[in-house]
Length: 279
Image 1 (tube, rainbow, N blue to C red):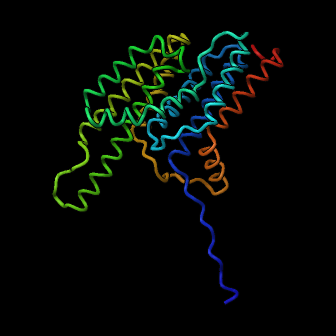
Image 2 (cartoon, helix red, strand yellow):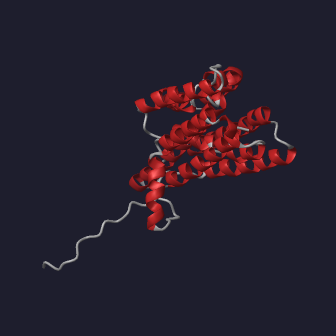
Image 3 (tube, helix red, strand yellow):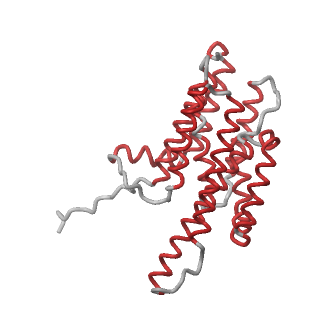
């Protein structure tokens, strides 16, 4: 009896969210490195600017609506560092503050969408498009980021609707679905994806003026990302890495925004205290 084997702890499987966050933080690192240290950051931007959309998407997709206080003080601190590096000029408040605004607004946006469906969707998209010229001064990425969050919310509603339909089908046999209209929610999330992608390409091209080949590469990359997000559903990934990598992915997935804040603050301080490193 004393020699009986003890049950071995089984590592928690890697979630699809862990993979998505890891890819996104790597792309963000590429973007920031090019911005702070590269003489010509165009190609760095081609790949790096694909890092922000997954974060906005996940903000819309998540069920959690609490706003961690650390987002506020980290966002304010990073904004101050950015302004300090730009001779105290006005800069768009950090992306973490935009995430906080999204978290606060999402319960009301979801209720509005579920109550009025297509009317609400059209009004929300029209409002965000109208805010494009000014929202970038209010928060980083402005309304184009909020469009990705709307896409994430529509994806979540669609996924929840499919799950509810499966439960109804299992419990009621041939009874019609009760909770959602799959066709409407599926089409809505595809349209949200299309609008977010087109607007993002348009706005980033305005900012970076990519060459034709760079723009083509950016369009291909962001289109692949959009397709991936359309297929995204939170849950254990079909691809499970070796156990020594699993822990790393779990850590990145749970501390992504802290890692973002550390590397951005590090780059800001490096270029401020060692200006020769900047291009």
